[in-house]
Image 1 (tube, one colour):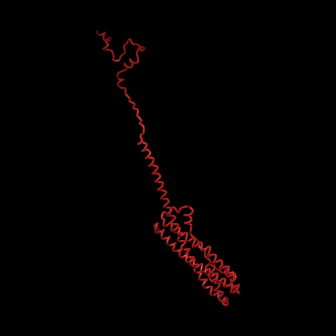
Image 2 (image 1 turned 120 degrees about the horizontal axis):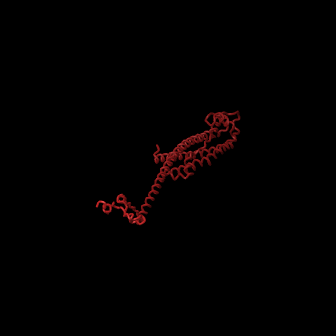
Image 3 (image 1 turned 180 degrees about the vertical axis):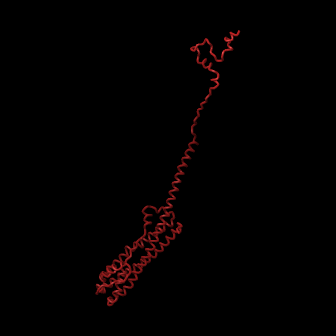
Length: 295
C-alpha cells in the first residue's frame, strides 16, 4: 500500500494543478485560482478616493469679496495716512519759512521807517534855510548837507518768497488752520497795497519831483563828490568853489520848497502805513508761533 501513496490525492501539494491539464487548457479563472496562497496573503488592497468638489455658495463669494475689499481699503488708508503726514510736515516747513520772512520784513520795515523819518527831518531843516535867500551862501554847507541827505532814497524790499510759493504752487490748501491762512492773506494784501504800491506809485514819484525841482538850484558835483568819498554812508559834504548855487531865484526856490512839502506829507502818511505794517507783522508772527508751537 506504500507504493500507492503517491497516487493519493491527499498527498498531493495544495494548489498543484492536475497532471492531465496542459497549459493551453488552463483558463484565466483557473490560473487565478491556483496562485500560491502566500502571494494572495501578501497582496495589499489600495483604495482610491476621489474628493467631490461642491459649488461655491453666496457666502463664499461674500467673504472673498470682503477680504479683497478690506485689503484694498487698508492699502488706501495707509497711503492716505502717509500723504497726510507728508503734507503736515510740509505745512510746518512753510510756516517756519514764513517766520523767517516775517523777521526779514520786520527788520526792513523798521529800517525804512527810520530812513524816511530822517529824510523828513531834512525837509523840515532845509525849508527855513532856503526861505532866506540872502543868507544862502553863508549857510551853503548846511543847505548842501540837508540836500544830500534828502536824496538818500531807500527802496523797500518785500520778503515774499514763502507767500509766492504758497500761491503759485497751490499749497495754500496745506494750511489747515483757518486763522493762519486768513492772517497770511491779510498781511500780504496790506503790504502789497499800502507799503509796496504806495512807495512805488507815490513816494518814489514825489522823490523824483523833488530832485527835478532841485536840479535848477544845486550843483550835482557836490553829491557826486559825497558818493565818491564815502558811498551812501552818512558823512560831511565837501563844497566846490563859489558860486555854490546855480540860482537863488525866489520862484525856483519856492517851487523846490513846495515839492519838499508834498514829499514830506507823503512820507508822514507812509510812516503811518509802516507802523500798521509792523503791527500786522508782529500779530501774524505771534499767531503762527502759537498755532504751530514754535518757540
